[in-house]
Length: 468
Ligand SMILES: O=c1ccn([C@@H]2O[C@H](COP(=O)(O)OP(=O)(O)O[C@H]3OC[C@@H](O)[C@H](O)[C@H]3O)[C@@H](O)[C@H]2O)c(=O)[nH]1
Ligand SMILES: [O-]c1cc(O)cc2[o+]c(-c3ccc(O)cc3)c(O[C@@H]3O[C@H](CO)[C@@H](O)[C@H](O)[C@H]3O)cc12
Image 1 (cartoon, rainbow, N blue to C red):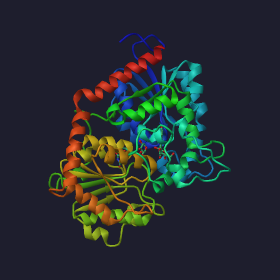
Image 2: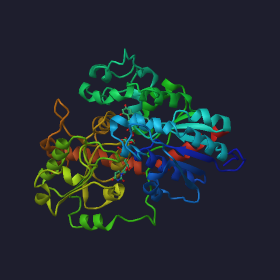
Image 3: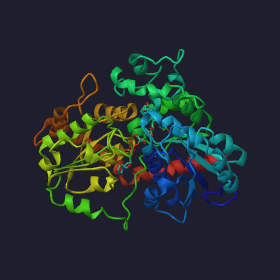
Image 4: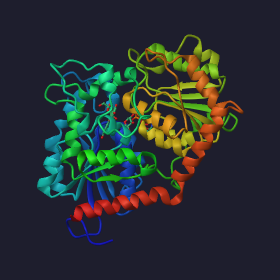
């Protein structure tokens, strides 16, 4: 490599400051590992509370240094809230306000470290404080290109009259030039997008923040690849007139000395036949909010007759998953079904030989992990972005089955049971089709040169950017 970096060394010095959500921090850390593997130095900014959970993912402690940031209390947030997991969805904007208040601390860090590059996704003021220290900025998006293309491009701007909420039809309308008729939302699903354009005092809307973040950076990066989302990436590039760099899937590789699956899950899973267990996980944030929908999920899995392991946050109104379980459920499924409210090692569970099906909320991280796994996939997306990821997987790539919902958005135990049986049942036509397509995609994505090729190209893009 040529010489680059402000001090003329051959390694770049990078600061990362992801949005205060585990799905984002985890994705930024996986990318940090890939860049550290190439010899670059990273200072990773995160809230204190997140450190214990994120630290074990650091594969290069000598090159990736964590720096904890104090997240101030903002009126209206639960006491001690530091990440999205501590905050109900409708208060997320207050967490963004709190993140904005960390600006002076981050500014000091940048002045001290004088990095070559700063990566961020939510803190749209990063370019203003990075430029004076000579750093280039990369707005790194850990969500699908499709979800950015549908709502977060200049052409998706909406005129909000007197703070009036938009109709579902208005929310569902793709922006001019949007490149897909399949990866779209039904009107009832688009209601979950109303948060995107809703204005909040002192901070504007989510749309304003993201558009500012992408307009002001030196380059936009997206955790995706051309093979799955090329047309969406081209659309974003044309909308922002900024270079769009792709990192590829950026999944953690199997390390020879990696930690093993917790014995309690390894031992439990070992009791079942290969490929027989249904693993169900809904990401790092509480997503199934209503207790009756939470119970329907449990009852649907019970009805499949298959062994199952669920990792999910409790719904609103209760503090543990046990309190939310349907009556008599634990007794009925004892020995073959577990619902757990804590953190599990999802990638290792997906890798376990006994696990044959993944019921997922289709967060973008989970989407990549499931594509790389051998599991059959059933999708139960909850919010706009996850619904778009699900459409990409079920409609464009045809590698998964999405659970059917009723007009009011409700999914029944029966529809979940049917979806699981359709992919797990022997001789099922749908099951065969998605398995075949999934196998093809896994082959492409797990080819030894595929992910490495993306990272090498990405590193070259960064090098050119720093030198420019
Ligand atoms: O118990 C758990 C829960 C989650 N995880 C990991 O945490 C990550 C969760 O990320 P996901 O993207 O799937 O889902 P989240 O809902 O947490 O993320 C959210 O923010 C990031 C976006 O890219 C997602 O699309 C959005 O849903 C995955 O890598 C998953 O393996 C665990 O390892 N254990
Ligand atoms: O729900 C969403 C629908 C959609 O069309 C786009 C997005 O984009 C993002 C996003 C996040 C980060 C980026 O760098 C770009 C886009 C979404 O992010 C999620 O927003 C939630 C509300 O603030 C937040 O709770 C969650 O942590 C984010 O992952 C959502 C949509």
